[in-house]
Amino acid sequence: MRGEKVMEDFGRRRESGFRGDREPPKPVKIDEEYEVDIKETSQRGEGIARIEGLVVFVPGSKVGDHARIRITRISRKFAEAQLVERQKHEEKETGPL
Image (cartoon, rainbow, N blue to C red; front, side):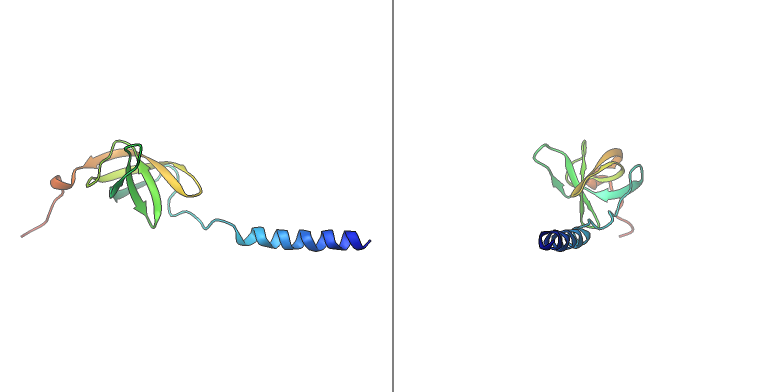
């Protein structure tokens, strides 16, 4: 009987620990489009943007691009996106001088 109580206590502790480990909701949704600036390049040569801190890999983009992307996959620590439209940094409108 005492062994059963220890198992119950252990189960409660373990369960409560998992509740605190849940990932917060992601700032992006699959198939949604976002406008981003590509700030880095990954080791595989993909452009990297960040949306509210979440890393988004964008194949076909380069550092300095301003792009419209569509989210195709969301992982625990990053997202992947398809390039919808790319505008190079130099072509971006600067506004009135």
